[in-house]
Image (cartoon, rainbow, N blue to C red; front, side, top):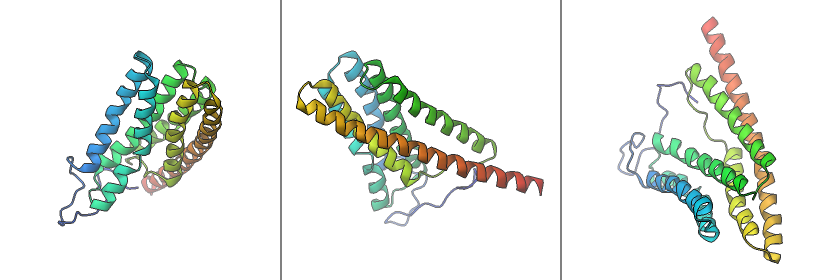
Length: 210
């Protein structure tokens, strides 16, 4: 992690041009489409209650989580905007789904509260880092794994709530298994970010004192 406004190094594209400041890239387009899926899901799930269509939107948004990053690295189109859009889309999917599921009693409110508390902790850490001149910490693989598990769990839980057969029982077992593992890893990643932020703040204070 580096202080702002210092700019991190980014890979160069096949043509040798730096892509750090580019906006119109294929990975960014995928991230924008994923962001549009958030209000679409909320409309389908809460307004018209088209659960099957909502499951499809959730499944596409969740399974495409890794696509934009993979394409960015593959094509040398890593950009600062992409580094911000990808975790933003993940977080919005998780928060929107949690709130919508809680409203329709697909998940209990304590589960939602546990995830929201982790988000509040991370936001507080980001505010402290920004005050000391640091940008957001790089995404850790533990956090990406937790996000993947949660985004995979949500459509399965919705499938369990939308059916009343043996499929519902199986889907509920799989969905909650993914959800609880995702919650645990989400908090593990949050604790890692807080520890990293604390070390950076201490180093900044020692530098200021010197």
